[in-house]
Structures are given as structure tokens and as C-alpha cells.
Amino acid sequence: MRLRNKPWAKDFIQKHPEILIPNPEEFKGKWNEVFGNDHPLHIEVGSGKGQFIVGMALANPEINYIGIELYDKVIVKALQKALEAGSPPNLRLLKVNAEELENFFQKNEVDRIYLNFSDPWPKKRHAKRRLTHERFLRIYESILVDGGEIHFKTDNRGLFEYSLVSMSQYGMVLNEVSLDLHANEPEDNIRTEYEEKFSALGQPIYRLEAQFAK
Ligand code: SAM
Image (cartoon, rainbow, N blue to C red; front, side):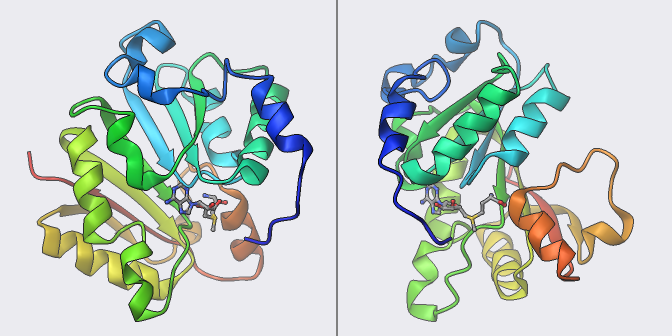
């Protein structure tokens, strides 16, 4: 993703701690208190400009959502979308690195993880950076409920093939695999920014649902 400098992003972010939580480590094990209910918690890792997570929060008010993104310049767009959508009460954003998820969530706290159009890191020597590498699967498993699921969409065939192998070698069960999601797009599919872009170029969208052992 090409990033332009946005000096105003930091200030804007600081003005909205009610949505973009500045001190997420304080809420490890207590996200139900933040949301004020015991609804399931779904997180998106690498939520980019937020179209998916904001859309999901609006469509499913009985589920709590947290969008996780590494960069100020990107997450500020998700924050703007959340504000424009009327600050859905079931949505929060965290500007953190997926490598540190265990600092913010405890075991059994997260019910589902979404990965959408994760950076493919095509070079073999960068495989460890892929968000479906074994080292990330281990982190996801350590915060998910037993039998928790990962839902993954991508336009990148290489990353999809790699992820199928990585997940099955890890011992996960594949419950759904689609090699062309938009050929028969489910009514409740919320498209991400990247999904719209690649679909408009005529590229197939790959999707899977995988589950950790119970
Ligand atoms: N999910 C969005 C979509 O489908 O439109 C954005 C896709 S973009 C290719 C991948 C995003 O993941 C980028 O915004 C990037 O900053 C974020 N990202 C990559 N590695 C991450 C990490 N370790 N922790 C949090 N976010 C990460």
C-alpha cells in the first residue's frame, strides 16, 4: 500500500480515544466491559481503510468488532469511516502490530479472526511476514476460543496456496474454500477496498474458512 504523509493523522487519532483505543493492553481480558455486553468478539487483522470492519459492525449489531491496523496513515481512514457511520457502539479500532496480539487479548477472548487481502510477501525469504505463517497461526490460536475460526479472502493465488498448506500443516480444518467468491457472491459478503479494486480488474477472489482444533 502506497502511503502519503499525513501529519494531521496523529492529532485526529488522539481526538477519538472512544473508537481508536490508545491503551489497549489495559483491556486484555476485559473487552466485554469496553463494549458493555457479552456478545461474541470478531477481529480483523490488517483492516486497512476500514470498509469491511465498519460494514460488518453496521450489518451485525449483535457482534462486537475490533479492527487492527499497523499504520496511523491508514487507520485514520477507518476512523473517519467509523465516525461517518455514526460511531457504531460495537466497533473499536487498534493501531497495533499483529505480532503483539497476545498483549491485548487473552485465550478464549476472540471468537473469530478475519484476514482480508493480507500483504502477500511473495519472496520466500519473507515468508515469515505472511499473516498466515505458522508463527501468526500460533498467536491467533492463543487468543481464540477453542475451535475458533479464521476467515480469509485474497486476490493473490500464491498467498492463497501457501495459506492452505500452512493451515493444514498446522492441523486446522478447512470448512469452506472458494476459488471465485464473486461468481456466486453471498448476499452478506461485505467487500473490502482491495476486494473492490481487484474484482473490478476481473481477478477472482479466493476465500476460505479454517478452524483450529477444538
Ligand atoms: N484489509 C484491507 C482490504 O482488504 O482492503 C487492507 C489490505 S492491505 C493489502 C493490508 C493491510 O494490512 C495494510 O493496511 C497493512 O498496513 C496491514 N498490516 C500488514 N501487516 C500487519 C501487521 N503485522 N499488523 C497489523 N496490520 C498489518
